[in-house]
Image (tube, rainbow, N blue to C red):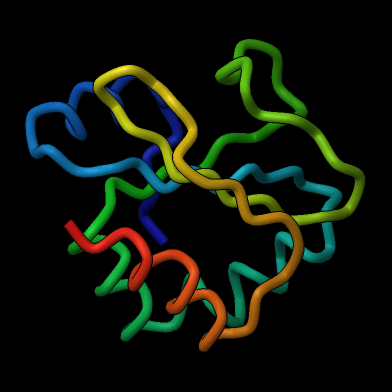
Length: 112
């Protein structure tokens, strides 16, 4: 998907471009994370919309040092929308979202 894996780089880029960061909290052992990647995030039309509107990031929550607001939930995908100016969490989506719900809850809700 080409998402940045360094949250600090994402913060700087998002501040410069005045866009929110969409953080996908990922764990290698999470089956719903794989399903989200395969069926939603890697779909070209959705990927294009995400990259136009957000700074997309993926953070492995099993690795120490991730942003402190990221929580590890066993076998569940989580997406955070983060304001880069103050690192505040604007939204958190827990669980697998189908394509329509994903677009409605993330992209449409956070149009800037």
